[in-house]
Image 1 (cartoon, rainbow over the protein chains, first blue to last red):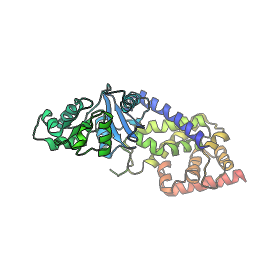
Image 2: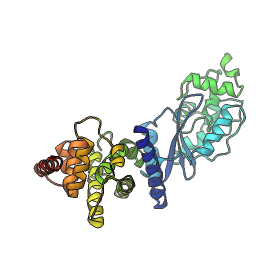
Image 3: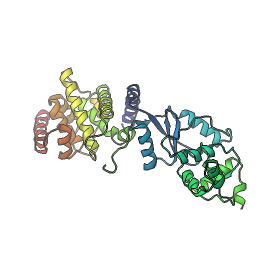
Image 4: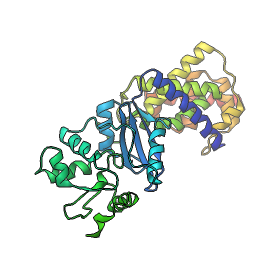
Length: 196
Length: 156
């Protein structure tokens, strides 16, 4: 009986969301994607991937950023996440080194945006340092602030903040946990950072 | 802003859609009508965003659904309950039987039916029922009591 209700509800929800979309009431689609690192809560805006969050629910601050930029029309949407799901899957299986999907840093400060754009340019398999990223973001002395911006990265993996390490090569920190950072660098074969 | 209020349509939907869908089935007695009612309710909520009663979005949704169900019935006049569709939303926690529900659906006018289902099936408190029916708490109690009498008479 419960199954039947679930199926009926899923159908009804699909139709509701199509109607809301046709009326222009929805802006951002979100989904929960399985990954070797656990479930990822992802959001796709009209401009591209806006959020990848480690866990089943976004943090309140991430959700507030999306609402600030796109309003409340943020709804579940499996279809919209399919391109990202495919690229992530290929990445985790060693079949993809760069992401083709667009990403969306709207709503972040200019400094955060510069830090994350600089980070997006670090190639697969290599690492950079907080100092180098700060310099590329226009302020060589701001390595601590760069670390802060990276810690708040709303789109980890696609914007590869895991490729930024301390000047000694130490992993230093990662919003998804140091084990996750290690795993990501492992997938990329960039294990040199762990040795020191 | 009250903590825990939904920030997005998605949150509102995920928190309340199951309950509102079940309510729609119980109110309309037909799966197809219930789907329409569920869609109309949430679309109206999205259009009217933000919820006017912060901290009580659930009662707000019930109010929208109830008003829409009553309007719909005024237009359509006659509703024939489909017992199989009702079974989709069979209550599991109280002593209201499907027969009671079918009786209620067939014999009550829309406003009293809503009062009955809100209280006896959905298990809402009178404060929320008053919001949903847009009346005082006292009037809500009176409507539920009146509805109950009729249901008992109908299944006697």
